[in-house]
Image 1 (cartoon, rainbow, N blue to C red):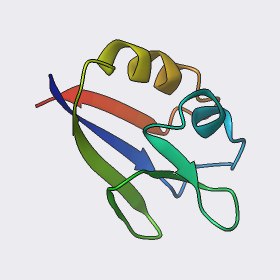
Image 2 (image 1 turned 180 degrees about the vertical axis):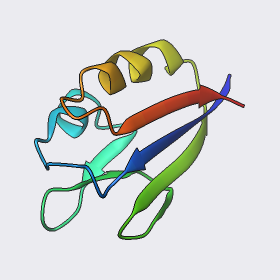
Image 3 (image 1 turned 90 degrees about the vertical axis):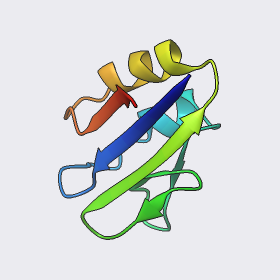
Image 4 (image 1 turned 135 degrees about the vertical axis):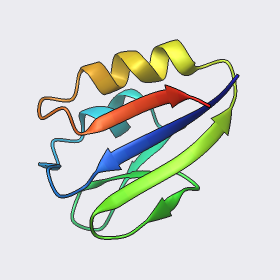
Amino acid sequence: MKYEIQIDRTGCIACANCYIMDQEHFEGDDEGYSMVIGGETNPSISKGSFDDEDFEYVQEVADMCPVDVISVKKV
C-alpha cells in the first residue's frame, strides 16, 4: 500500500514519541525534532512516501502525537 507521511515541523515539540515507537519511518534531527526517514525535510515540513504494509501502525503512531503534527494518507 502506498502512503505518505507528513510532519508539520513548526509545531513539533521534540517529544520523540514517533521515533521511539516507529524507527522504520521516523527519526529525530540533531535537536530531537521529528523527520520522515528517507523523505524530504526542511525547517517547516518533512514528508516521505512508503510502499509497505505498515499504514495502520503508522496511523496509530501519528494519532499518539501530543501536538497532532503528523498526517498519514493513502496515495
